[in-house]
Image 1: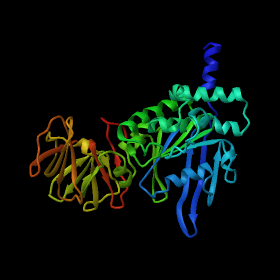
Image 2: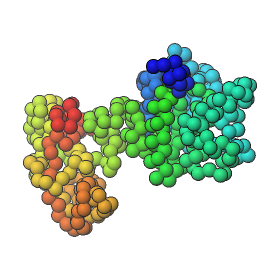
Image 3: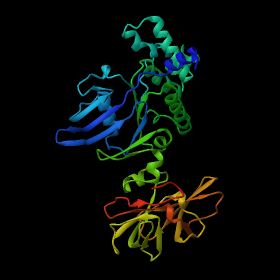
Image 4: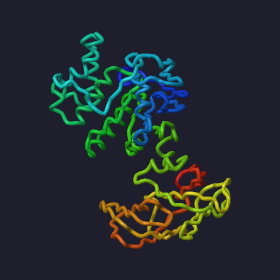
Length: 384
């Protein structure tokens, strides 16, 4: 690498740091919002917090930012304990759901304002603003006011305002939730590209698991103030630890069917459904005994109209046809909600039709009565 390229690479690489949370908790009076959170976010990693409303993901992000006090445990950014360090001194920059731009200022001034308050030299301010604008592709808009911009352009300005601070850690709190569907798709690409360009630690909160799956190096799934599972998107999809993660990761959500354990060995388990059908699963359930209540999980995209050894018969109640894919919502014994089938191609089905379906053993998930996943023994789609 020549001197010029090394210099450009150094310009793109901002300060980076890992984030360590040990036994972190948050309480409001006697009400515990977060409990015993242990998490190590590695230097330069893109980590996404997901979970339903009220699970504590935004509170956890705000605690990292210093906007919420930590009730228990410790938080380190880099090598520094920052529990009592003010937000401005933590080396972080946060982008919120709202753009929070000054309407009377140009985009240039919006991005430069924080640096000007810190008495950064004028030529350095200009260099940093121009550099951030180029990264975000808004250098031609710097003389405009926020009212002249689209939602996506305003969000880029908010991100640019964070970039010029050269933070150790970027924090994003549902930054795309105010955008329309098409623009959210485009902005997901922009966030991924931004991380590639800056190589900075990024922590991103969203309720949209599609955003999490497409952006994250690792996903942190939270529920009721606790971490349910941490892993890569593919790990969580292929090997969820429990019913909650299995149902939350994937769109549409996984189908859950009440079943009874019949028999099993180290690589194969047989369960019986409420209609008497026997289903073979590529799983290991050494603690299960005949007659135990279990839950069978099948993802909508793994259901086929090809009759494999595992055969299912369902009755269609509602159909969504999207052209290249059709979603059939069906009734099925042992399923409290609709049993969802994703059928590819042009499929002509209607309410009242009976579907003969199949699913491969290595596409089946199995959970015990407490909701904990039995180990999958799949070989074709990813080792257990």
